[in-house]
Image 1: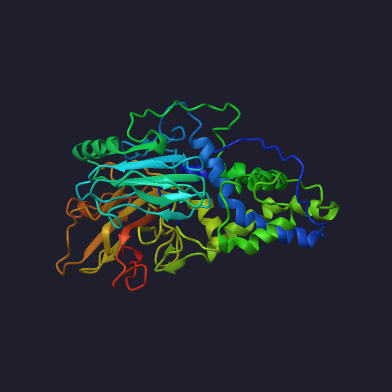
Image 2: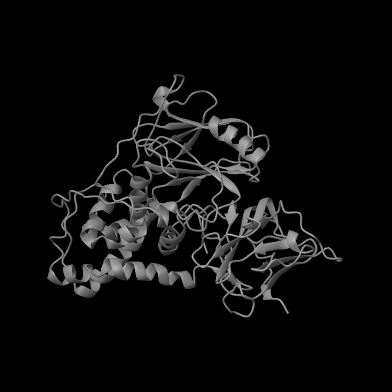
Length: 472
C-alpha cells in the first residue's frame, strides 16, 4: 500500500543532527498530563512530514558528488538501470521508469529546470514541498512532451523570469524533484533514456544564460548514513522533535488552512522560526511529552487499517499527493511511502493475501484473470510487480520481475488473459503470462500510471481489480 517505488528517502535513509534550542520566546502553558499527551500527539502527527523530509534531505545530499541514489543539493541523480534481485537500497523498487531526482533550496532564489523534447515518451516530474504535497507535476499528462523550461520559486519570491520560463511556486523552501521517465529496460531503450536524462539541466536563476557547474557538496561526518530515517525520526525526544519542527517552519511555512493547528502548536511552545524550550511545560506535562514520539507513531501506523480501499484482496488509496488538513493521512504516507504521486498520476494497489484471505505462498499456484477488454485502464502504462515478503525482487530464471502493458500476453480463446503467479515455470505455452514468484511468501503490486479518470476507472471505482485466486 502506498509504495512510491522510491522509498529510499522514507525508509532507507537516515540523518543525525543537533539543534540549538536557545531560549523560548513564547513559553508553553502548564498542562495536565492528559492535556500534554493529547496536544503533543496532535502536534507530532502534524509535523511528521516536515521533520522526515528535512532529515531525508540531509542524508540524500550528504555526498561530495552524485553517487547512486544520492547527490548534493542542486545536483541531479540520474538512475541508469532498473534494480535486480541483489538490490537492497530501496524497498518496493520500480522496474518501469528511470528516476531523475534532486533536492533544492528555493528560499534564496528560484531554480530553473530545463527538459528536452521527450518525443512523446511518458514522463512526469512531480515536485514535493517540505510538507510532502505535490504542488506541481510537469509531464506528459499535464504539459505534453515538447521541450520546456520552468522555474521553481519559493515562498514570498517576487521578480521577473526569463522569457519562455514557466513559474511553479513552491509553498516551502525545501523542494524535492522526483522525476520519472518511462523505459522498457532493453539496452536500446536504456541508451535512449540516458540521452534524455543527460539533457535535463538545473541551475539557479542568477546563473541563467551563463555556463553553470554545480559546486561539489560538503560532507557532514556527523550525519549517520546507515540507520533508516524513519527509525531516526522515531528516536527523537519530544524536545528534539519540536525544536527541529519550530526551526523548519520558518522557511517552510504552514498553509493558511493550518491556522487552527498553528495556534495549538503555540500552546506547547512550537512557534514558527522561534527558539523552542520545554521549560514551561511543568513536571506533569514533561512526563507525558516523553511518551509522545512512541504514541504518535503508533497512531500513525494504526491509521493504515482504515486509510485505503479494500477490493478483491487488494489495498490502495487515492488520497495521496495533496492532503489539505488530513494530517494523519499525510503522516502515514510519509512513514511508508514518501514521494507518493497524486492519484491522477499513479495508483499503487498492493495485495498480501489471495481471494480467500490467505497469505501468498510460492508453494502454491495462483491466477489473476482479466476479462476481455478489462486490462488496467490507463493513459500511461501499467505493471504488475512481484516482490518477496520484504518488498524486494527475488532471482528467477527469466530475470522477470514484472508483467505489464508492454508484455505480449497469450490470450485465451475468448480474448481474456490469465496471468500466472507461481514459483514453478507453468510451461512453454503459458510462459509469456508467467510472473515468477519466490519459493516463500510473496507480495504483488499493481502500478497504474496516469490512470483513466472516465469510466472504467480505478479512481472512481468503475474498474475493479481482479482477485488473485489459487489455481484449482
